[in-house]
Amino acid sequence: MSDDDDASAFNRAMDANRGHGRPYLAYQSRTNGSRSNGQGHLPVDEPYAARERRLQRVLWWDADDWNEVAIPPRPWIARPLLMRRAVTALAGPGSGGKSSLMLSWACALALGLPYRPIDPLERYTVLVYNVEDDQVEQQRRLSAALRQFDSKPADVKNWIVRCGPHDIGTLIELDPITGGYVMTEAWEGLEFVIQQHKPAVVMLDPIVELHTAEENDNTAMRGIFARFRVLAMHYDCAVVLIHHTRKGAVAGDMEGIRGASALNGACRIVLTAFPMTEDEAVLHDVAPNRRREYFRLDPVKQNYAPQSDPYWHELRSYLIANGEDIAAAVPWTPPSLFRDLSAADCNRALDLIAAGPVPGTLFTAVRRGPTKERWAGNVLLEHFSLPESQAARIIRAWVQSGLLVEAVYQDPQQRRERKGVNVVDAKRPTTTQAPGDEGYYNSE
Image (cartoon, rainbow, N blue to C red; front, side, top):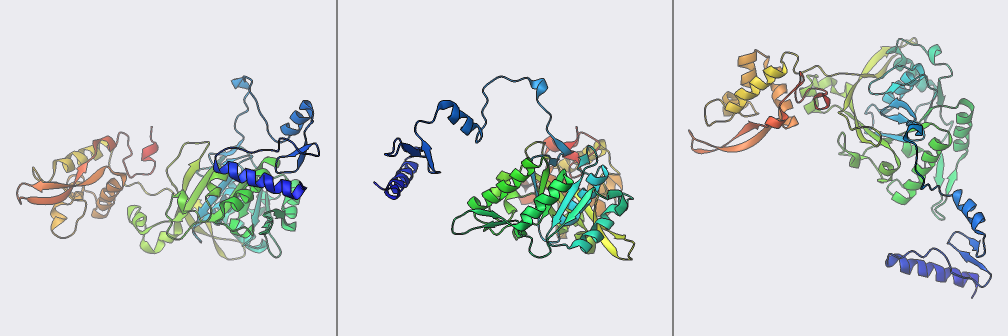
């Protein structure tokens, strides 16, 4: 039997055994004294020690006990989102604040200053590889980002390394015939810059411009992301990948990230950045014409830290020295809905809402038409003298948080079914914050 015939038989056996769930790893024997594992020929009489050394270059294994005290801590750069030897992905719609956020992160890391939610342990060198912004545009945007830290370009000299292509910035090309990966000259250049400056964090923006694979092909994308994971491990750095979301995606939904799901498996930390919605603008008392100036950052996957509530940011305009106004991402805390109410006040209001406007009747969450007299916000107006706009936002927040839930009941006076709201006691506030207020669910 020729080698070609033998290889064909091997492939047929592999296919047959895959169908039955049985592995078929290698030939048991060959006429030329070797066997194949599908990756080339291996000697049948390979000594055990030589085989062990060879396989230890491929896999590690350990069955011994271990000393917990001697376990090295996780190599955090900035908790809870950046860690050495790990890949972080940030996805969102176009013009959603992703790139501005990354440049603000770069400034915070380079200066060693906190920037909610990241808190750098020290100053770090950051490399920004951006395919969409040229050298001058990166200077503009970084100048604006530095303003919030009362810093200037000289303060981050040799700490923020800007990098980008003169032409096409593709780093990895996929051969559609062989399925092999070819690292481009741009990749070689990127590695050269990494070797020269030894950054702790490498930011790559955006993923779609970095490779030529079909982004909906899980197998192809798994290989692409594996290369970035190897990059992070080889250079002991954190890699941040900027990506886009599908049309119709919403904040905090990992399934809304565009392309194959391989990204979610390859990255240890996945975030989304989305502009403020109309409902959120009402909730946070932001004028409709200004809501695009705000966006939320949602940690949707955190393998090394607990899940958290969204972090809000504002795109604030800064005047830089050349006379231009340039936007930069700045942490923003929505004004508290409950600034005029204590936890006891909230619970008293909820008691009144639970009792209903009259016995046997429930309040409603809406205030239009004939239901206006039964609107739950009237409790806040009459008993706590809140403005109507604030009362409306509080009722909406309680509905969105599940503290108030809609129910159908039999009205004893009108003798028909009507809709109203019930209070879910398990979600009542127990701190000075209340459901719907920033950070409520994380209070201790």
